[in-house]
Length: 388
Image 1 (cartoon, rainbow, N blue to C red):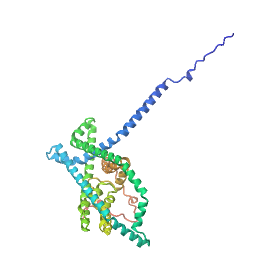
Image 2 (cartoon, helix red, strand yellow; image 1 turned 90 degrees about the vertical axis):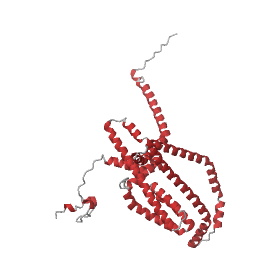
Image 3 (tube, helix red, strand yellow; image 1 turned 45 degrees about the vertical axis):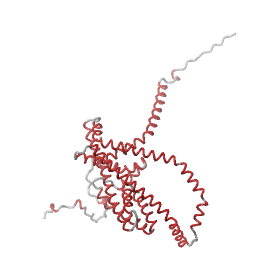
């Protein structure tokens, strides 16, 4: 029997697995796991980062008042407590006023709803030559009661989720308030600790940026508060003149919401006075809308430029864009913080960006050839420079 020999060929060095490939695969999997861990941690901690950012901006806004009291010899901790207690009292007063207004307004609307429906149906029948009745609308509404019952069922199922949302929001507000108090009271220690981590050449730039942030954020808050007071007094007086109830409370509501809610605050604030006017004299709602539009124009072009000229001097288009970007990134919180953050960044960059003199050119003012441009009062010669 012939023996069969089997030859085993050894693989050539070129066909072997590179020695570095297993280590590279292990390293790639380790890096992928580290990325997933960091990504998970970032998503879990984004809420805390947002709360810390809000607390930092609140402490920046409160620090000028605390510094002023500390400069008069008041203990910094006591000054911080006094400032935050005043802010807390004003906030509670506004919320109580808002609650009273909402309860009374809803009650008045429900009481006047039958009369308003009768007047609306009469106006529709007279204008469009129809023959609707309130009973037909009521029958139609209860005929389609499946929609109402399904909505009530969904609302009942969401009660637990709503309660959790309210409790979570309250916990976030308390957390932000506590950290704001700590950051304001220990502001000097916080700045000293931060500067201790930097070389002396960088400490001045950091402290300068911190001062700009305090000036712009505090200026934004105080300018908004002044505009809110003016708006509250003006709207309260107008609503009192036309005979609306709770005119002073409605003025406070309008002043706060219109001044502190960016971009759309005026329109949100105008809803409640219009509803109150509709329950008493519908024609007053028209006067309220007209007054709101006129006052908004005066505030945008007369009051606001003068009040914010020394505090938050931001171009209206830039402010609107910053509110949109802030809202897209962080929601309502980003929209509220967008303007002071933009003002701080603009003031900081303006001191480090080089600017050059602009040569006179008719294309800048877009004047026609042969037409002299309008004289600029800022460049007008002074009487002292007149040779005569």
